[in-house]
Image (cartoon, rainbow, N blue to C red):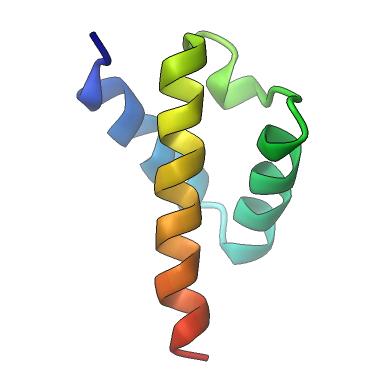
Length: 64
């Protein structure tokens, strides 16, 4: 079972760093790399973080 609280906290931490950083993290996660913030997460949780970051950036990018 995925720990939604852990996922949300990770996403929030990453988003606090700004859009450029989030885009870099998305690229790394998409290519199968890890980032320090996701190192403790399981595969499913990392996938959930990636999906959430992509969703957030899609909304943000549609407004610019």
